Amino acid sequence: MIRQRTPASAPTLSSAFIRFESVGLRYGLGPEVLHDLNFAIEPGEFRYVLGPSGVGKTTLLRLLYLSLRPSRGLITMFGHELATTPRADLAALRRRIGVVFQDFRLLDHLTVVENVALPLRIAGASEAEIRQHVPELLGWVGLTDQMNARPPTLSGGQKQRVAIARAVITKPDLLLADEPTGNIDSALGLRLLRLFEELNKVGTTVVIATHNEALVTQRPHSIMRLSGGTLEELAAVAA
Image (tube, rainbow, N blue to C red; front, side):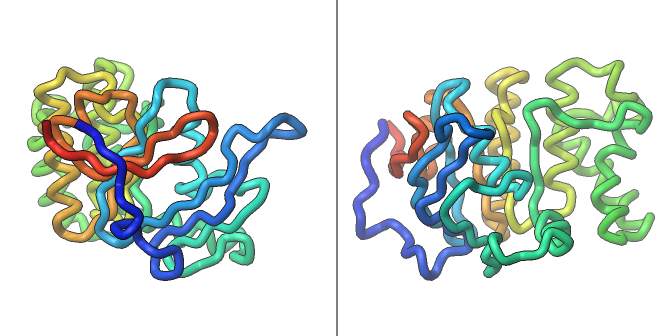
């Protein structure tokens, strides 16, 4: 069951880890696809962005990942107002964000282990740390027997699990996931959501875009419903 969040429980914009104020986005000279987005997310929150396919969930995640700039309004992340942040500094902010893309974006010439290890290598982790953490995480997502495989040989569900492992391996400050359970069965989907919840418990802020209403009922967390290009904040409780 889903019920509307009471105003008193909403975080204040001034204190938020992430803040959108009157944000709108249009492509070229077309109409705004997102408009009047006003919300704040505190450190350590777990939120769903709920809505049907094509409503703009991926576009919102792209704003959160800093790969799009808004057409209007203000976005603040990690204490930085993005409108005044030099492009050269955005790369450092992106390194604090893990992303599970809907199209996976795996590197086909690398093995599963190498794809997952890549963010650790970029972050300067030692080979000993990589040998310890990567196989452990791949075992957790059920890919122990595919560690030396390359993405073209994997199923869609296996690629999705590799993408999830790659996104969470560095324990990012912010984890964004675009339909992360869309290509896997419900049992594994719930297991992966528990992985996101474990990361959330140790401090990672999690935002998951999904159209799956049953999922948010089974693993209830705060919800932002996207409809008509704008957001309504809700709170979810178990039935």
